[in-house]
Length: 217
Length: 217
DNA sequence: CCAAGAACGTGAGTGATACTCATATTTGCG
DNA sequence: CGCAAATATGAGTATCACTCACGTTCTTGG
Image (cartoon, rainbow over all chains, first blue to last red; front, side):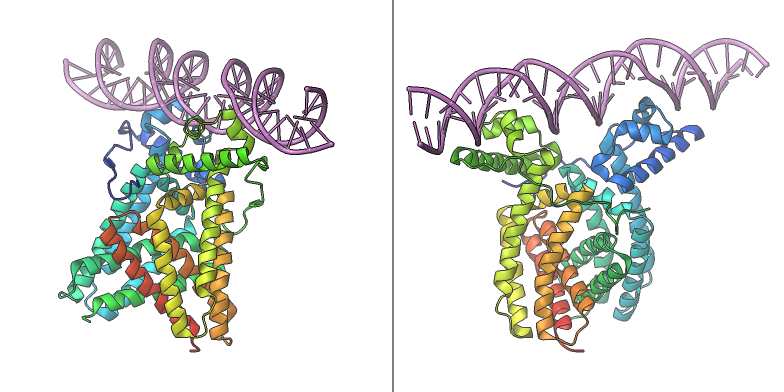
């Protein structure tokens, strides 16, 4: 009945850009389009994004817009990919030198703070993600990204406790990472002081679970 | 720049139904429409829901559809409200008789299992929620619902530790509840065995945070 | 520097779809 | 039965995503 376990063919490999811009002029245009998309989504939500409005705001004709993006979803998808890459780099960087449980605690705490700062600076990350969830194919793509991020964490956990069952570590890692994103989206949806407290609560939950997973039972 | 703290006028009070069906025939029609909406959203996602298709599948004309639902968002919103009410009832029921920390542990563990069962039975809850997040007004509405649910939990925590700071309890409760929904949506997006492990991981995290909040430090 | 072709830009036009409204049908009620 | 209120209908309208035939700018080899 549900499509959950078996997306027929999710095809996250479809090209986001229709034409790869090679000249400087066109690369700048793509950037202007993306910047305008961020502004519009931030202002009124991804549902209210109109391609004509986007073109006008970017100072570009409708035709030009479609030279680069095959459809509206591709605009959102390109933004999502950028944010994903940025996030992945943060995770890899912060967790690179972790050697013991205490190091993991410090590193992951720092990672949460860094992530929160990213969301505070660009709360539109929340809306881009939301836009992604309404389409099964895009949702599958995002889940795959989350798995990749979780795999980095799971690898660190496995180093700290080589005897642990891999599925258990993967489950902890995926849950902690996915709930982390959810916590960030929630935190930027409320006023700052409350958001800080919510991030603190998540941080306690995440660190406790990672500590539990990282030591032999 | 962001709209986060000050949604200009979120208006979650707009009526979901245009005309309140008073005769039995029309009440049945509304039910048929909602059932068809669930089936269509489940099959291809909320983005791909077409009003004409919905009318046909429900055995109703386009005009009838719009007699009851002012627009497409109202259909999704009605479903979201039903699921919210059902969830609220679960929470209130499971947490009603909690007297001590151990009781909270048992009750909340049971609540998570009940919630997970609801999501497994109707994974479309995930898609309905997603559809809700693309529109700022609907998102504000959902956040208000989450706050109401969290308030129930915060009240229990306050009873167990009357000396605790209310904002701290609210933060713990809101985080635990919101991440719980996120965990359920994640769990029904993967195969069953993995979903069970993910719910287990969330359960550990939630119970640890609630236990921490429920006892004087 | 020039020519030719490749890359890029354009916006009126097309099709799909959310939503309306004038009219017809059904129901409840004396 | 007869009337009014409620309900049902689907052709019609407005809006928006997306296309395409043609014009403009860049690049490259001579």
